[in-house]
Amino acid sequence: MMSKDKTSIAIKVYKIERFFYLHKLTFISQIIYHLMQLILGCTIPYFAILEEGVNIAHFHGIVINQKAIIKKGTVIYQNVTIGGDSKGSPIIGENCIVGSGAVILGKVVIGDNVKIGANAVVVKDIPCNCTAVGVPARIIKNG
Picture 1 (cartoon, rainbow, N blue to C red):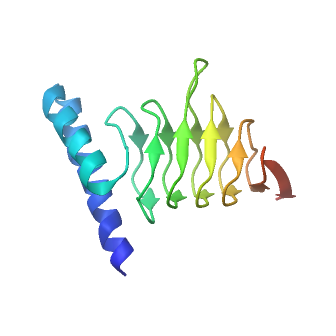
Picture 2: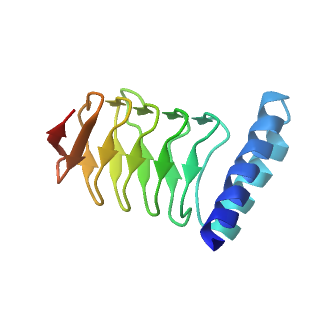
């Protein structure tokens, strides 16, 4: 029950941050961004695109790349890193689950309805309706 309230706070803070960014008040966005890092212990930059219905179940330790796209209905657990590289940033599809401690790196595309296991390291695309686990992540269930 408590984590749901905290999630609401993290998502609300992100939305406020994004609002100021979209209205070209980036200085205010940057202040809110740094306060979020300090107080909530997560990094969700205002450049990132989190669609409606994204749920961060336990926001502690979350790091999201500034150009990442996370589509609606996705659930992200604690200590997840969604990071880009020089080639690009991840795109996570609809209704995905990203387990605790998972790392998604580089220009990868995660399909819809994908489950990524705890502590998995994803460096390659994962098609829709799959479950991926391990280091590096491999598909253990397709469909």
